Image (cartoon, rainbow, N blue to C red; front, side):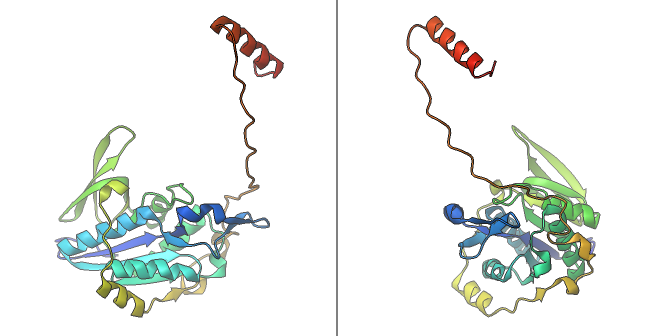
Length: 272
């Protein structure tokens, strides 16, 4: 693990996720046996918050120099997301793809990503989007930080790096706070952070030719009982579509009369 002293350059790792395109969510199906999403045949995109993480990595690289490595875990089709990240300007990409990883919850995912980051080796900063739009847990970034023993700052909207320290503004519900920590560190970023750039034609052509290594479970130092569905303590027991609510009733009469009718109906329904 590289600890940067003078910020001559930065080695940044960005962890991204390929998610179903929000315009196609109505087409997503559920595997009734495993209660997991069936993603085949559904258009996919880079998780939007992860694009902000990539963009911030690119801006830091432009300022300090260095290299950007993008990692994702998913099926073979997740390579498309990595190629887009390369087209934006990332230097390297790694795909973690193995049937053994399938069905992983956030605990198993963060465990696997942390192992991959250890294999990458040198880094000063690890960036994540604040959460994935298909899960909304915001747990993977913090989980990776915990497994690597690194400080973390979540929901970051602005960042400054000086010498071996990172200072970030993190978003709260109705305010923000400034947090400072030593590098290396893990940050999860919000949409307020920046506006992701479009890929250049040169970047697209370069990404198309790039060789992306695929790491399987056997390529990493992993406990087989802690990965994939078997290593996920969070289990989906049942998935169902809620019944549509019935039509409401418009009460007539004066306000006191309406209140009396409403109370009567609530008592009959044993709500009160």
